[in-house]
Length: 79
Image 1 (cartoon, rainbow, N blue to C red):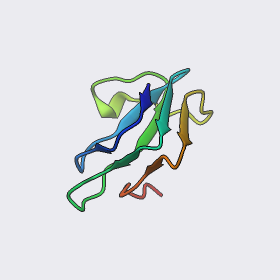
Image 2 (tube, rainbow, N blue to C red):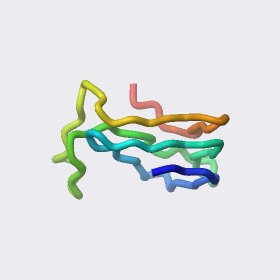
Image 3 (spheres, rainbow, N blue to C red):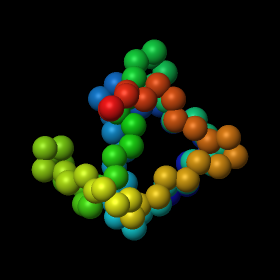
């Protein structure tokens, strides 16, 4: 998936990147337009509709590529 334009995410939104998947943010901004924070990106083995059943992976086999000033902002700090 390649994202080339600004995308707005609600405060409860999360992008899940499965194993072997790639998202390229090419000069785009991923943000929340209402001043809130969103959940950002989670690397997982396989997406499931129940967030409690999603297994996060320690070894990132999926890719998030930021290029051409692509960036994420207003992301909730998970640590």
